[in-house]
Image (tube, rainbow, N blue to C red; front, side, top):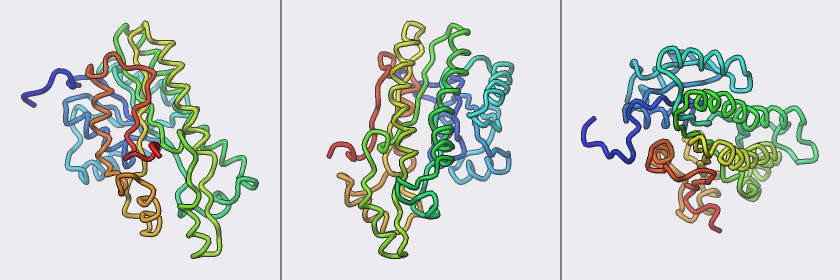
Length: 279
């Protein structure tokens, strides 16, 4: 690439994106890759065929600057095996994007989307294990490698508006009217994502003098073609901008946090939510 702004340059930075084949994760991979970063794509269900298909949909292909790893971020062995390989090929990482996570969609069955009083303990534990414990373990493993290498680093934890504020249950009330079965946006995702914010602040102060910056990027609702029109209408009616986000509208913020453009920013929460939390 030519004519790069050095302030936002991520050329040759060694970047890890967890959940890198997801809707937003693949966008983060694309944004880093097209700016000449080296990108390690981590996913719990990883295959070359799946990656090639996903990236082709976004208009780019696998090359020597993308490496694929099957990693369950809740398992230390997976994390360290992937990191050993990355270091052997490229060196210690510069950037970690903690994007992997699971949530309960409006199409979920009633046993995992009913009233709080009956919410299954095992589902709560699973969501917290992936979204919060997995983020903790990835920060721990990658941060240790960056610190040992004595290089500056940027860790970007992906939050959620539902980690900052409670879900508006009225948005989902139509499900009961249509089907007779209520959908209650579950507590687990909110509880797990809210923990990300203080994990970020803790690590920002812990690693500050090591020049390892840790920030949170908070997105809002992302449009998907699988969402029904009633849900989209209800959600957009609450959004100050009157629409859900496009999946590529967080890429600029991600590059900002990964690059020297945010060199004095740590422990912060960059909210890109169309005004949702401004109400």
